[in-house]
Image (cartoon, rainbow, N blue to C red):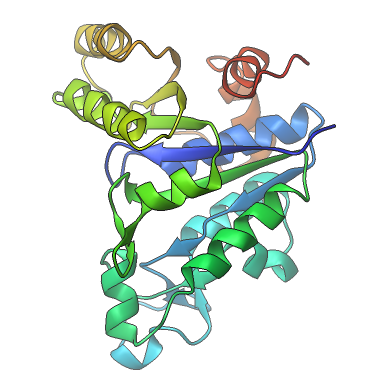
Length: 252
């Protein structure tokens, strides 16, 4: 089959992009796809194994992106392929651009872009997850908007369902459209157990004002960290066949 990819864009940081991407990846594996994952540049990395404290000498030596680890575990990618998933893991709770500057790291934008496209061409379906929101600074003058535009993949926007989420979703989708990024679907991740009426009306208004379907509302997950249990839970509110058809035009 033709190699396909999906960009995952958040309306903000901490909306659950990595959790949702992991769920989608696990479902894709279960649906029979060979799945790739790319988190091209991540900050907030920690030393192996995770340390409680960190000093400036630990910015880029033996660092682990917890987001990348989650994505790898979700689809069964071995540790030997970590660099494939996450070429740059940088310490510091900053944007990737600032984290790289503080660490004295030069991010090779063209190389990361080509690496991502190479991974997309290696698997049936590859998920490419950004960092923070759509305009998060990546390196130099480049933001993740530039990156998502340059990889030319259809996108899913992950939004929260709280008060203010309509505004964030509309702005993200409109900004993506202005920059030639085609958003095919929205997934709302209800991380804070929003009032049901507010959540329902927010979801309806996201669709109304963006013209983009909300294909799933992910409820807060309190279950065990067991892939099969989590996968069964996810299938109770995500129709993966409908999702693949809407986002990448694939009927399976």
